[in-house]
Image (cartoon, rainbow, N blue to C red; front, side, top):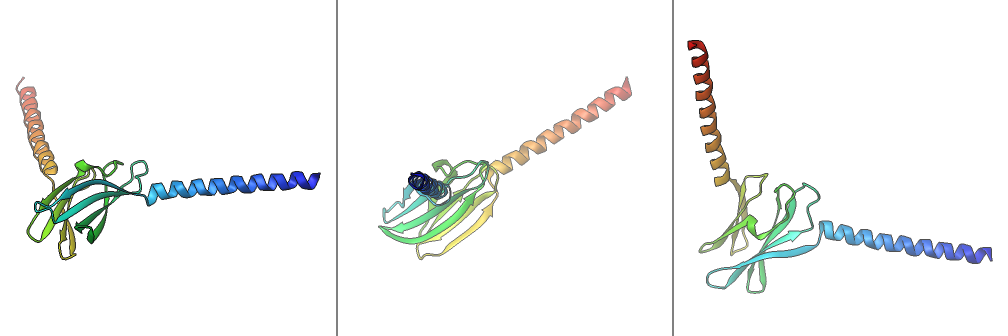
Length: 165
């Protein structure tokens, strides 16, 4: 009787451990590896397409991992992996702009916590990226400059009024 109870307890423990292991594996897969196509754009001639994919999910306020896939028909020409720093936001259609050129496609990725990133994918399989300043950053700098000027003028005016009174 004792052996039978012990055997049942061991079986329940083993099954429970296996279920937890499988659930942990699913959690890790979804968090780090699951690929989801977020958006797709086609070239004007319809010969090429580019996919914006999310890879995994951002945790709290970490970077979101993504991938660009350039295709000619169903054939993959090039894949480009990137990280998007967007205050914990996920990869979504609003983070990219696509510009089709004669021999390449240029993608601009925008995140709240990074400079815009320009990624150039050539129809020959070449890939290149560089950081570019965004219009948003330039607008913020202009606003800060005008605000700083206003504060200086107000400060001077206040000192002048205090000295004159």
